[in-house]
Image 1 (cartoon, rainbow, N blue to C red):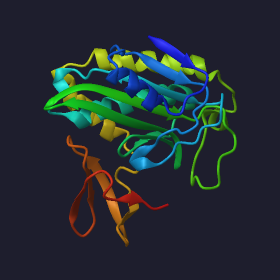
Image 2 (tube, rainbow, N blue to C red):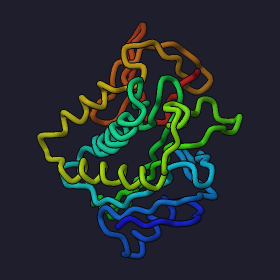
Image 3 (tube, helix red, strand yellow):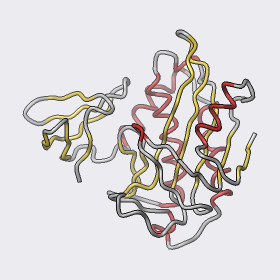
Length: 240
């Protein structure tokens, strides 16, 4: 169920190819020691130095409880990653909307979820996770990266941590039922980056300050300043 790749273009592409070929099983994971073209949100690339970080994709068949609650599936994955990272990094760990892992004001990890739909049927999700573990220097094009090693002053075995992360996600996802959905959203919002604080956002060419309130069950960011605002993913970006 846990596969190790020496090198691949993208673990998400590799995993999705297995899904399309009918060769994937629920919970099957692919960890890459090196990615040549790692994928991030909105077509961005994910930088990861070979052998130093977690780059993993997991094929999941979402439970029917998420059929009308797609964002809560994303939130559950983000919480599992958050809990995992916090267990090593300690305090000041947050989930930045929609599903980045932050330490203080710095990005430690990101999640990219790609779905395979058949009509109205949600058959598969490929959950790609990149977490900075031992990397100590990053491209100047990245604004605010940080690694677990930089936070803790220790080095770790990325493969060992990836296996623990995989188990953490499977334990979480396989135990969720209908009654847990409200708690998932509450826990997500309890750990939301900049919740209750003023953030600078950019929409198109307009930059403005607004207070982060919460994220709703549809994955929309709710903020308030002179008026209450609702933003879909990709509609605004944070300005630091």
